[in-house]
Amino acid sequence: MTERPHVHTIRALDGANPLYFLAGLGILALLDDDAADRAAPNRPALSWAYERGQWAGVLRCDLDAEAFVETVTAHLERAGRVQDADAVKTAQREIRDASAEIKKRRRAIAETRKRHAKRPDFDPQRLAETTRDDRESLRHSETSYDLAVDALCDGLGAGPAHFGDIIAMRPEVFRRAVDRAERSGDVSRGVLRQLSALGSDLVESDGGLIEPTPFSFSNGASGQCLLKDFRGLVSALDKGLVRGFLLDGGRATKRVTSLNWEPNDLRMHAYQASAPDEDKTPRTDVVANALAYLGLGVCTVFPNARSTALLAVGVRSRAFQWVLWSPPLDLTLARALLAHTSDDRAEWLARGIAAAFESTVVNPTGKRKYFAPAVAR
Image (cartoon, rainbow, N blue to C red; front, side):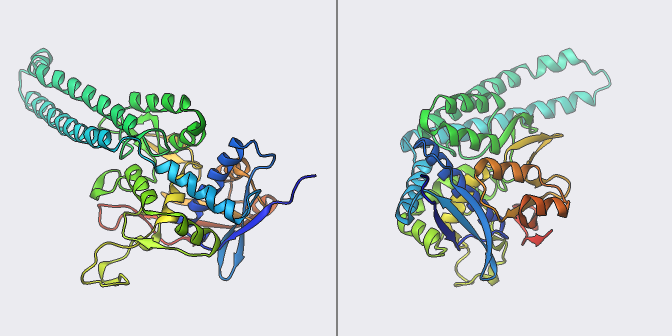
């Protein structure tokens, strides 16, 4: 006889908020991995219920409250653990040096081409000879960059955010990361899922690097780095914070860098709650942000012209569009629902969709992207 599942209503989640919706997906994904590792007969399932003025997440699984907290905490700590901090620092320095040299050589080649193109006696062969040294130096620097990224990955170890500090790697390095994940044993499932959501090796940026997920709001700009920031978030949490989030509806905040997925992150200095004249660093819900990064792994990237898109992201509007469902769905069914949702209200009813939201991506300063507050669809 199959035991009845434990039901956990997570009131810290808010399905109408992009950050907390993704955090709900993150909980479902990591518990699904745990159930698979234990060969559990039943997979966890997530649904959404409107309670006390917001959409709370309802998680059904075979774990009681204490085991639920233990499992989520252990998974997050393992996901953010760094294997060799000294090797990471060395590799990061080598990456910075190689990146600077690559930019320098590309700039020199571009300027030389521009000068030659203006000459009435333009000669492609002469241009090739003139830029030969710079092109050879560029190839050498690109090789050094790739080796440094590989060294960084080795120093970080195996994990869902252990491919560097930002999603900026050449397609060949990205493919090697996939190969490494496939050989990494018990962590490969979550790592491969995350890689599929971080970028596509079929789309390259102008610099010859893979195009990142649309959710990488600050891919190295303004001191924000998606992968590095996730590891920093994990280092800032503990079992007590996780317990408060999962069981007590708490949202403990710390002064660490967020992922910019909480619409409240877009707030002017004068409107910050504490010491607006002195404190310029917003407070971040560390548990929600860490879980939301894992939830991103549920949203697979696909090529979209010269950029990337997500299965749950509106392509034309550059807005995150998602739905909430009332029947309990396991990870496979939840992914299928997010990937194949139409705007037909009759279809929504048939599929158990209780609500739908959209959050536009905005960039008010021209430096950093944010989610605007969600609106109902």
